[in-house]
Image 1 (cartoon, rainbow, N blue to C red):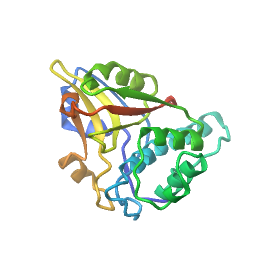
Image 2: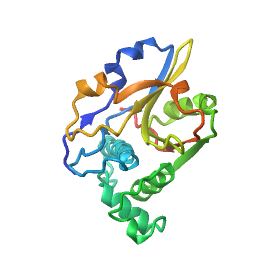
Image 3: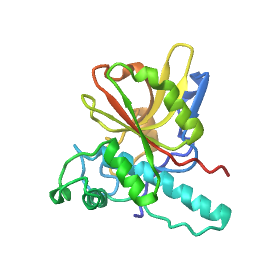
Image 4: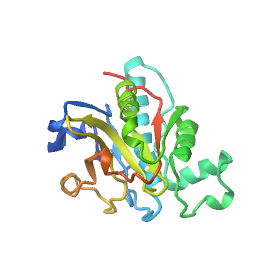
Length: 226
């Protein structure tokens, strides 16, 4: 899949708000921002979970490339899957019926974990947050970024719009997560527009829906330092 995508390595440094934090921990290493229509496939209205999965897969792929270079190894490099390929994987694994392929059914954190394990042999931890408890899991998210530094997928029930989580920050007054919103629907992303319109932005943990539960898909692959 050859695409003209926004590279997100150290993207938090492009955001003025980042300087407000006392403590910060983010994704390390290169990866791509996937969003509605980014590959010409119209998935508006249902594709957010697929796009966040692709963003995570791009990070894992780049880690494998780095590992092959650093250790002269020959690990198989698998490109991030298309929306249809994700659907085919979930059918092949027995998670979805055959008519899921080509449908407009959305996917969540559990389905993302199946795809990531299938393609890259990377297990994922599912972190479940009951309604109103999101802020209590700040330390869990911080531990993930400090120990693994891989992108995370976030989704809920009442707030069922999938989001990528790229980091976590803390100030004296509040805690924040760095969100990559895959609902941006211009085929070719513009970095200035992404920042201006907050498609990639810091959000207070307290800004999320207290009536919704949230799940997080935490890929258990560690960043390979250079």
